[in-house]
Structures are given as C-alpha cells and as structure tokens.
Amino acid sequence: MNQTILIDTAKKLVAPGKGILAADESSKTIQKRFDKIGLTSTPETNLAYRSMLFTTSGIEQYISGVILYEETIRQSIEGKSVPQYLESKGILPGIKVDKGAWRLPNFEREKVTEGLDELRDRLTEYKNLGAKFAKWRAVIAIGEGIPTEAAILANAHALARYAALCQEQDIVPIVEPEVLMDGGHDPARCQEVTEQTLKIVFEQLKLYKVLLEGMLLKPNMVISGKEAATQALAEEIAQATVETFKKVVPFEVPGIVFLSGGQTPDQATENLAAINKIGGPWQLSYSYGRALQEEALNTWACFTDSARRVGKEENIKTAQQAFLDRAQKVSAARSINPS
Image (cartoon, rainbow, N blue to C red):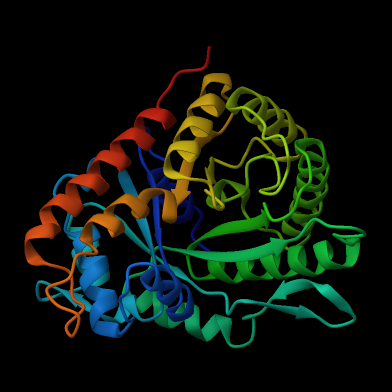
C-alpha cells in the first residue's frame, strides 16, 4: 500500500467544485434505462451513449472521475482506451468491482453484495487497465423487521474486505452502503438505519486496517421513503444528513460523495446544495448516475428510424449541452459555502 498515492487520488476525486460521474450501469441496468427510450443495449450502443457523455467539451471542469463498467474499461474512444481517453482530459478512471446484490441466505427480504472471490486478481488487472479507484455497492432495505443486524454486518464485512484489497493495489475504494429509498418510511427511520449502518461499516473498516484518508464514502442522504405520504424538504434532509454523519463518519475521511438514489436531477441538486449550506469537516460532493445523465439520455434518444435505433448525430451536441448544464448545476450546489 502506497499511502501517498491513495491520499493524493482521494483528494483529486473530491477537488473543490468537482464530483464523480457514475457510468457503471451493468448490462441489465443500462437496458432498463434504454427500455424507456426504445433502444436495445449492445456493447456498441452502450459505448455510443457513454462516448457522448465522455467526449462532452468542458466536462472536466465539473467531473473529477468516472466509474466505469467491466465492459467499458476495455473499450476505446478516438483511438485510445477509455481510461486513457479520460485521463487525457484530466479525469480519473474508476471501475465497479462488485458482482451485484443477492439474497442473503436465511434472510428472505435482505441482500448481500457478492464479488470478493478472485477480487485481488481482478484488481490487479483493472490497475493495469488504468483504474485509479473502485466502487462496491451494498444495499440496505428498510421494512417491517428489517434491516437486521446480520444483514448490515454481512455487507459491512464485505465492504471492508473490498476496501482493504483495493488499497493493497493503490486503488482508492469508494465504500457505498446505500440505505434504499424504497418504502413508505419517514426520515426519522432513514436516519436511524443510516446511523446504524455507517457505525457498523466504520467498525469493520477499522478492523481491516483500511486507511481512512485514502478512501471515499458514497452514502445515501437521510431522506423520506419514495412511498411516504409526506416528503421531507431539502433543509430537513440536509440537517438530518449532516447531523447523522457527524456522529459516525470519522473526520479523517477526505470526502463524502453522495449517491442520488432515485432522486430526480433537480431534487439531487437541491438537496446537495442544502447539505453544503450547512457543511462539515469533509468535502461534500457527488457521485451521481441518473441525476447527471437523465436529461442528456432523453435528448440523445432520438432515432434515425425504427430499424437502426441509434441516436441521431445532430442530437449529440444538444445532449452534451444538457449533460454539461446539469454537471455545472451540481458543481455549483457542491460549491456553496456553509452559512
């Protein structure tokens, strides 16, 4: 482990005014996105869409890193590998390394993320392909009788082992324990579960000797469930989020890169701004997927004909402008000084 490399990379990922683009959708997930616009996912169409995002002029002003999918890290743009292309723009390439969430044995309604088998070898390969950081997502569901301590502990244990393996390769781990928005719970319940989850996660990270200065946390905001009758306001979300994190997230962690977690682009931007108005001892940044991409995807999704189903060339510049505009808005929200 080279602590200097890890700390330097982590700081670059949360540089002032910048955040991370999550473009690591699995083949199954990107097909769900494409279903809404009538497009079939193939390696070629996936690359065409992601190239539209990555080649946007000026995006490096707001994007410090991009999380790639296994397929994408092996593809090329303009004669360069995708990692090389991103680095040529001053953007750090990263990689999603988990293998998805699967049912936890004996816990029918809860999941544990898998992918630790052979992860050391895969990380060596990803490093050789140019990856500077990685991401592993765990999902914690809220419902009657859940989450259980067993499910939280199983996911926290996996996150810690993943993080330790990443740092062994000088790859910065993004630790993502996501308390899901699914359900009708209120913010108080989300706050309770988020605090419990993060407490156990950092206990496990400490147990596995993970260098906190050389990692990033990618958590949910403390927010209402999607089916809740009353939705919390941005100021309420911000207050509960910062209050919770100050209790359980060590100040040594250089940055918190929030996930959007099903929020609309406007909601994710407004809530991030409210959080930064309060501020904290960490860089409070973003690692958004849909919240950065949605408007660009909808603009790009105009087709030449029903047979080709390929985005029109003339729509690329318009889609890129939509992407750039949203990135600028999110960057501005992340750059607000605490009141």
